[in-house]
Length: 286
Image 1 (tube, rainbow, N blue to C red):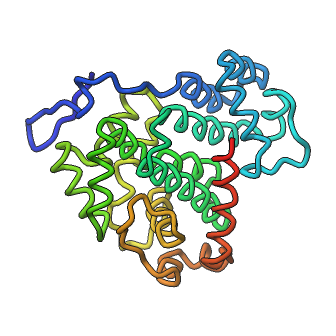
Image 2: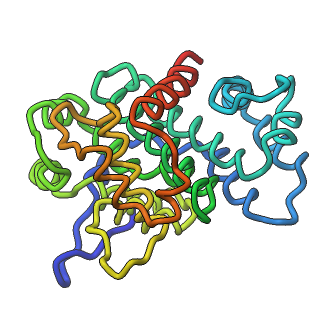
């Protein structure tokens, strides 16, 4: 298992080094790798997904759900890919991959809350990106993955982590500090290491490790900034990962958006909450 250098020359093992942590589904990893190849053929992606019948079944079911709301239901993986496109397929496979990774722990209240927060963040990020000039498909996949480190910590010690989330309140910084006290790592550091261990695309490393970083004041706006605001919008809309999460008033969050995104993003907090909940419930009913 790889190590991460921290605090000068000090190197520590990740908190799961001595455990058999569930691997991320390899079919999802391979889809991400292939879908980024402009020369990939649809039948190659279809054959890859179909090689894992259980994974393929869930991919097809969610592809036909309200999450994607296809005009005509697909009866095969190949049809689903043709309708959704390779970019949407990456987000779909990550959605199924994260659910598969969580396994039976998804039934635990703290895990379900983390999962709903991830998916809400992804859906909001997709909307925000659509209002500007950032790639909405990348925004969705980034949202699904942004808290993968939190899921990993919760998989390792679900009871203790559930207690941590249930008893701490306030800002994300307070949770990060509590995570370091419990594990020696916070979920941002854990997420960065998981991306490396699982050999997922390296662009996720900056997203999972930097989505709680303070916004730059130079007027720039990128994917990490979008995820930062999307994450807090998810909390404000009622999809926080822990009960005492500090929330920001929705108008204040809108004020953080660049003028273009703010002008084109028309959702109210009520419509945002309704639409996100509808799509999350559609996925959870699978």
